[in-house]
Image 1 (tube, one colour):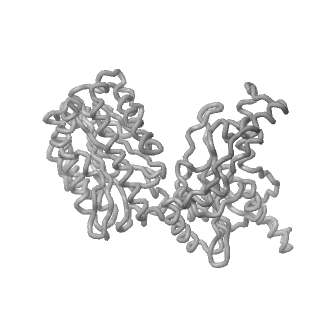
Image 2: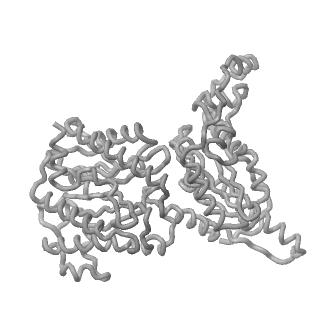
Image 3: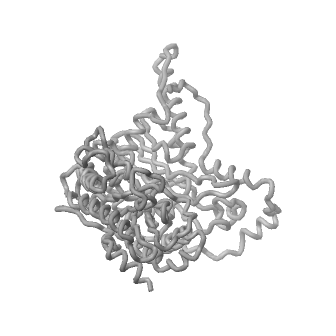
Length: 522
């Protein structure tokens, strides 16, 4: 749509809005003391804080290099990258905060980042001055300290000072209230990551409209209509979002190290699930036990799980995104576990293993498993710098088509099924074989197709290889003994200078290794 001029000033600081919303949620049941005597007493008698400043974190230099690339691509343009704010779960409870991935990538601030923070690139000569705005902690002599459950330290614990974050991230910091000055200077060229903070995006949109209206008046064109297109797909903003998404396609040295650590933590979580199989099979909702065991490791070694874990037993394994995880885990069935640990830096693994609960594959289960493993190995074999990303999927599909044709499941030959107008084998694997991985489990999702599916592989890229076969319980195109079997094998792959490395290869993959893994718990 085209938004016509509207110069009304609807701005309020993000911090004030968040504080007001939280207060409103609790107004009817608040018992916070308000006497002057209480305020004076609770604001006194505290030990001195340790105000020593930390050295810059390891990621700071890498984040600075990323910002330089953004600056070079958008010379003279003001850029706004919000972290986002808390999201309400129910009434006065919120979901755990997670900063937007673009903000985390360009600041190095992960699980310890502050809700409502904003990174601003302010044009400065040939480049930009980068500043992080966030709501600094309030003093213990303030009402916020004890009365604000959203940001008060009495409620949520210590919060950082501007000086602490500036030293930690090696970037300039300012109080969030000063962001009003940035918004007052917004022009029509200013760009914002729209999805990160809808409320802030709306303020930027209004500021751009106001600037356009004032510019029209200043040129004595008040009688001439003007308009500025500002909507959810505002193309200049979308171009900015694409750039910062594509910036993550090739991982730097820090990112690769974080991916290795996330995968190592995920491997520990998988092993702990195997160790708990006796308890898992004893519970009516055994899938929930699998989910809980893995989540415990994710919280011990990182920030959280990188996405909703899929703990699918028996026929649930044929449901691609089974996250209800409320079914039993029965000996004789397979379990498909798709899970990943997200580190405090937000980098996440994404790994799937399928294993027999009893420790032994049935003849048909093994047949399906080895076909999927063959597809995974075929896809991995083609990975090297210079190939096109979609070739990885094509290699896996050749195996899936050939095996399902050999089993008599297709109405045509494998070669005919692989033709674009047919694709009958995709009935048993409708998803893609690979996606980029990093700060998001489906990383770089806003990248152009020419850079993603049709992009050329480069050293430093990290992505999954995850073929599968899924035979629904009521699928009459397959024999009864295949129905209810779902198998996926997923590994995290790093493109190297001369080929590729399977970062998750240490987690058992072959049928024999998986059987030994499950039996070895005893």
